[in-house]
Image (cartoon, rainbow, N blue to C red; front, side, top):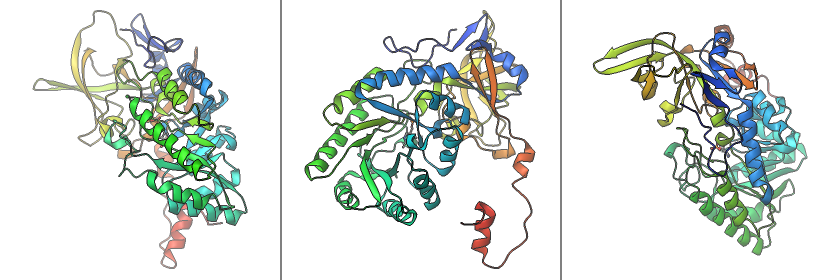
Length: 450
Ligand SMILES: *Cc1c(COP(=O)(O)O)cnc(C)c1O
């Protein structure tokens, strides 16, 4: 079995595969995953720096002719070392919370390369963003627009904003990750933009620079982009014909990957759609991919604990679970399984792989063609670099697992594993309170208000 990088297609293959089997041993870059697992207790996430680098370089190369810049959607993988790696290549950041803003800053990202998306930004998050002078705040509702204006006024600063439009396009993806259709909670309805744009462009606290769209995640069909982008162009034309200035467009993320080592959408074609659609529009362009940049670069390494057979179903209980990798239980996603050792001619069987969490949905899937599994056999779930560690929880009081970054022949723990002491430290006994309970609660949760 040869593992191909999932970005490849004949014309747009990445320059080299970062995962392969050498003599039956799963290798990431130049290291045996099994040897890493001898040093780091399973489960843990393991990322390939080269794969991330190659993905970013390929995308930015394809987008160069249209002058489109790239902001990484931090929520896909918010590890500071991953952010630093991407930022070092020239990538900006698309954040959706104050926490992600602090992560981007911790990674050394300049505020001038940060875009703030998200449907419900708090006033303190908005305040921090404006004080830092970030590149852009994407406004998702008239009420949020007023909040941003008020905060900017109170700080005596000007905020750079764009409006996120809901273009009412079906992204043809999983219902839980569609974001650009009427009824989805995201963005401002197309028909409401003109009036709001005219109103806000007159406010001195705001620099209204343009528009944004993001229609969904894990798009495998590129046609919805074409539809959404055409609507955006029509909107720009109509705003301009009524005298408004539109100079910046944020085209969102969502580019999908293949989760079975097949062919994902063609990134060259994606770039061509952008180039063709916006050729005559004379706007600064940005895209915000998350999954596409990091998804194929990561794996979740795990170990079989027990194997049991019920009727004709054989189940292997592994030490990773839904709290570590939520996508299977949340979206019914199936991650490919890679045995760390895959000797030629070994016995092959079908197994249901499950985690130890007390939930019926803690199932990774049923896999054919796996080698014989027993206690101690190590496996990896592939394509787990996006929405893996960043979505993990401590459900069942399981600690957040370690994250490891491999670069060439070296690896580094880029997040240590959480301990139960870390978890328990938050649950200190405070005194019972009666007076002004809201102020007291706020102090306990967030520290004293400024
Ligand atoms: C989640 C998100 C993205 C990234 O989505 P991917 O599918 O990971 O590319 C981009 N922009 C916004 C506004 C998002 O919410």
